[in-house]
Length: 300
Ligand code: PRT
Ligand code: ZN
Image (cartoon, rainbow, N blue to C red; front, side, top):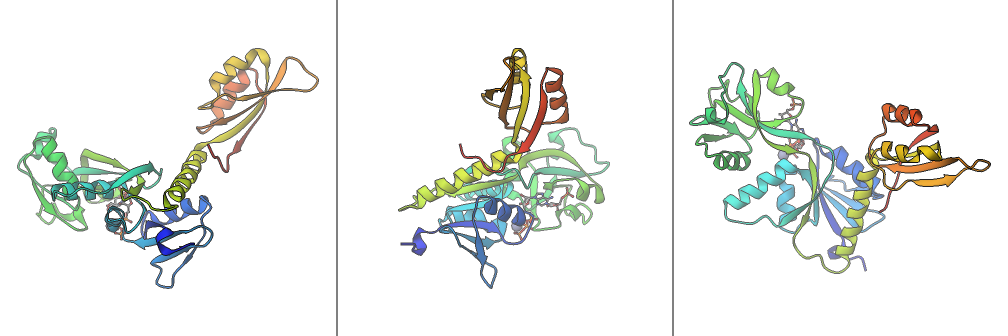
């Protein structure tokens, strides 16, 4: 029976930088959804897995409080929530299960251009504007730097111009927002990307098996992103050298070629991208008829 309690709920950002990537990833795991009229809920058509579409800041709380079983959210938001709960004396009841290879950015401290900066001691007795108070406090305390933190909910980069802060602490990806506001990065606190988190609450009935199944599919999808299937012909005597040159591949399959004793076909899954240089090196080692194909699905 497919009662509501037996359906998995995944919290996904409703409308933002992570939304398209998150939905695309779940679709590549074979999940199909119908979106509700209010666009806050996606019903799983082919598996008992539904999505809750929410603000990214709410995702760690929903997973920690067991409203959702899994969540896709930036590590910056996860760590901020974990630290703010810890600073309130509460534990965050979720675990990070996978890094998802999108939404890359870093949380950095930046100074107005021209500010003399001579290492972290320069931050002593300064005011730093941020919406990441938990991560910033943790960073400053671990380095024994006494500075005051000014909470800004948005547009942090204008705080120095308004005379509200000496430094800012915000997310950076290309660096163009900092440059446009006359700011330069001086410290990196955290390298972030989207991650999947799972509740620590026990999953009842068939739910754990279903979560394991979806995590295994996610793992497969992430692995094939970079993987390539490579086929080539090679003289037997060159096999050792060719094995060394195949990037990130485990035991390639070696198949005899009809009508010849000294030539074989080699098939291998490479867990890294295969660049032109690699193909040229393989050819120089004696390989011929080289073919590189994308991998669509993989199940370990
Ligand atoms: O409405 P909701 O609360 O859900 O969304 P949001 O506005 O809080 O988040 P959103 O959609 O902007 O970002 C979601 C997640 O994307 C973040 O939590 C990060 O994990 C990740 N991410 C990746 C980024 C960036 N890159 C990024 N560049 N989040 C924000 N930025 C902002 C940054 O705050 C700054 O204003 O982009 C600006 C800097 O970008 P660059 O390219 O100029 O350096
Ligand atoms: Zn947000």
